[in-house]
Image (cartoon, rainbow, N blue to C red):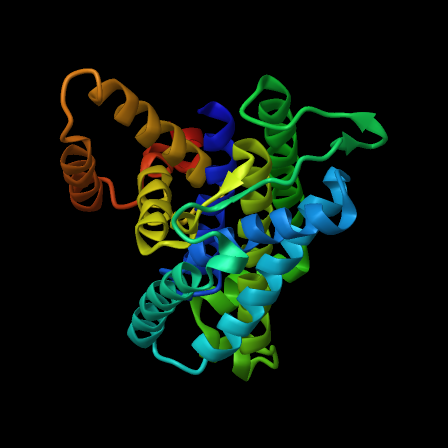
Amino acid sequence: MLARCVSWMFLAISFSLAYSYANIPSVAQATVFGAGAYAAVWATSLVGGNMILIMTAGAAAGALIALVFGALLLKMSHSGAAIGTIISAVTFSMLGNAAVAYTGGTDGLPMPAQAFHLLGMPFAVGPNIGMLLLGSAVLAALLVAFWLFSGTRTWRVVRAVQQNAMRAQVLGYNAAGYRLAVFAVSGCVAGLGGALYALISRHVAIEVVSLSMSLKSILWAAVGGVTSIYGGPIGVLAVQLASELLLRWTVRVDLIIGLMLIAVALWMPRGVMGLRRPRSSQQSQ
């Protein structure tokens, strides 16, 4: 369960990137996540058990689909993009159910039996401690990379575009280009998470591209703090831990989690990350 939670953290991060930094309210991030998962399964049949290539295939598939989505969504209004991604999520889910030969439909596709290896060393895939450590290491590397990138001039331009795209355009920056690039990165992150999910589960069903999965990514990001890249992982841990605890007392977990989301939206709009006091206020006290 923990290993799968790590893969879902990539999905939550991808929504935060798309919504807060590309200014695209994508309700189809699970479609990109699922594309990465299926790409990993298909790639395994082609490249064998090379896990680096498998994860690269998932990340590349996610980035490519996000580029296509993004090019279309940037031509729409904010609300239009949200509606467009909902339609896309439902459409791709229906197509996946129809294309049983390629996706396995509701039964899904098993990960091909291979001798998996990482950097030349044998590696056991599945819901085990090894995959938990691998996923955690990749996640940590990703978060460190974002932290380092946040101090660069390019990131400052991204934030300027996020805050006021028209003003950034007047100052000579290609606002649409920066937004598309950030959305492509969000797709890459989702695709990488999907590839890890496929390696952990050793099976991919069409439900991973469903609208409900996309809504879960929004829930995770909202609880952790949608305006922070680091909020997604916190949200996944908080929601999944709450779900596991609630299952011991009631079967109406979805109802309670829904009420939790309403409470977060009303009283904690910035999520758990919003509970941190600004550094300036800490220094003044």
